Image (cartoon, rainbow, N blue to C red; front, top):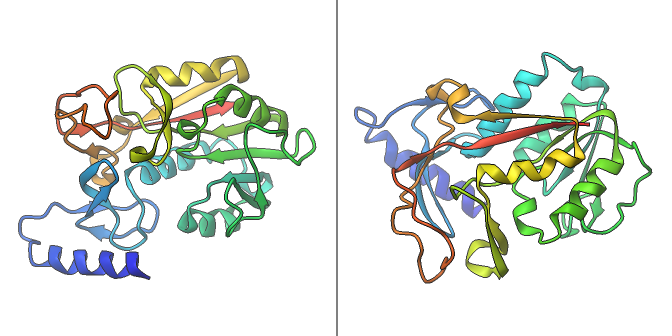
Length: 250
């Protein structure tokens, strides 16, 4: 409720700036208008949040990637396992797929409490799609997690496994960083090469693949990195950074 109030208040403020505030289109809920700023634990981002559904840049890019692959596969026949589920995506997924289950290491609000590095409580080939957005950057033993995901995927199954791209090359941390919500690494695009031993094909969608009307870029000043809270991050030039979504095929 508090987040919803903040979103409405920010939208009200933006409406007074409509002559100058850029307008975008949300592919998730079809809202058209200004997007709201969003302040994460590491700093503020402009044009980040849809004022209606709350989707962020990564969610819109992931939705566009899913829309693209839906032209090649029949979602209505797919069994889906969604890790760390976003509520607004869960509502969409529940009506899109043959079956839909949620999981997280935190048992609140999900069907299964699961540690992705431990054996999963499902038979092999139980799911046709596994969706885990911004999860693997929290897991030190990511290879064990990838092996577990592969085991529960059916033949020709798909895994959607994006992480935040916040470095030119992946930087591993010696321990989880509490100022980054427990991240154990700062992933770069090279991180997705770790997926290659587990899948036969990986297609990566990036922000540039879709219309700028959908606003899937990260507007964030990264020039001041590293900081005392993020001592291992390296500075990145520019204030607009592309995101990426890997679609992994078994």
